[in-house]
Length: 252
Image (tube, rainbow, N blue to C red; front, side, top):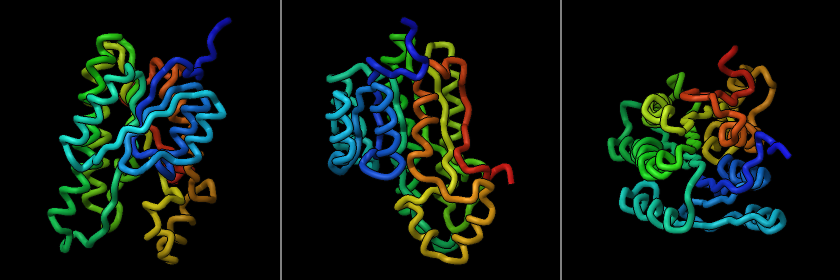
């Protein structure tokens, strides 16, 4: 029987920040597709994912990590590789801090860059050698609309996500011919905890909502299918792309 191109049975996926929101939905989508999931995150496993994995007969492993600390990320990579060969890496974990640019503390700027960009590179760098050796790997980075646009009161986040887009392309250029697909997805405006401040601002929320052609903010589940596609053999000739999942925002 020919294997379905979206079937991830036998593949192991590392997902960072899967305790809630978009990361939880991504991990659930990968479990539904048949993958073993290793959750790299500070907090405990989501009960939803634990239940889903049990019902699906899938393996779900939690490895604690503090994405802000280089040593912690290195330790998490090492622990993961003692348990599994990693076929898929989803760099989902990220942070957001809002200030007016004139008042933005450099310590906050560094905190955002360390988690959103440096840790992403460290994880790619740590898991890529095994993928290169096996000539197979799928790396999916979480970019943002602010990979393309500047945003308001979020200079560090915009800088970090712009860097993720360029990092994705740079790693594609080095690793595509070595069997690794490096791509990114760029979520638009999603109803998640990271956007609580926007949702609470009636004027800004209404401005954003009016511009989305789909007529609604995204739900975390709207991301999962795109990640499964980029993690699967269906995307074997997709390299270096940043795919917006934005309800049409960039088309407006």
